[in-house]
Length: 107
View 1 (cartoon, rainbow, N blue to C red):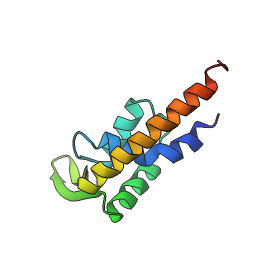
View 2: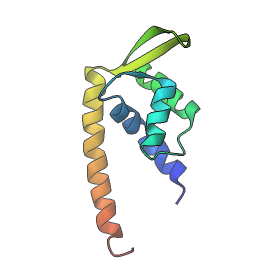
View 3: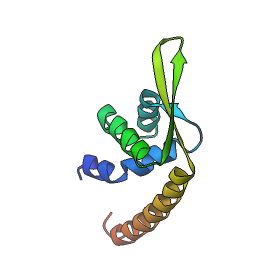
View 4: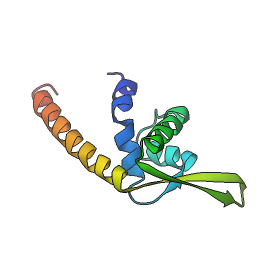
């Protein structure tokens, strides 16, 4: 199975989940997602997802000076983002349960 297609479908949920504990900047978010096992996630995809979620009113954004280089844009969840994450988590849990049942006899 091409995992990149699956990743495209769940990237919003993965980004929201990764931001649920604390706000962070784009590259650190990419690192977190990769460390969680989403090795194929691309930086451009994550940055695009952050911009879209912010433009749709689900994230906060703040530019913070950095001692290590240029200022960084930090993103965090707002109330709308938390609601979207809750809905997305329910949808994912239902979908993964259905798929697990369907694939139970296969492997």
